[in-house]
Image (cartoon, rainbow, N blue to C red; front, side, top):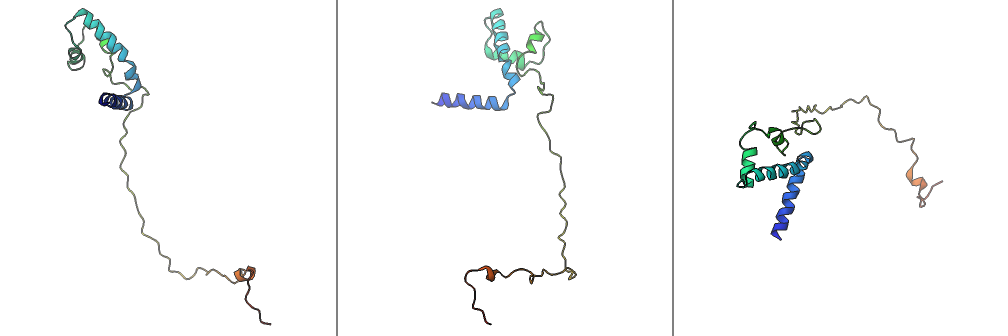
Length: 127
């Protein structure tokens, strides 16, 4: 069960954090490894990775094939940067405006109909 969970989380991590065009190049990785393995049967997978990824870009006879390996060349598939640094912004809060002027007319409620006249139960009327 642990192997299944570990494989699931590894696949989830790789698929969420890896660009898809790099995953497509995994076939070229396997093909290039088998080519090197046929030339030198003593070569292991770790040695192959060290030669191609941790020894710098050595321009040898198969340099063009080396550059086809995944994660070898940093290129943008869409041409847009993948990380955006947000610009700092300044939020200006104006002080509250207080109106102490009595020049504004008050709301006149005398023109509104009385709400109790529309009620079924009306107060008694005096004549």
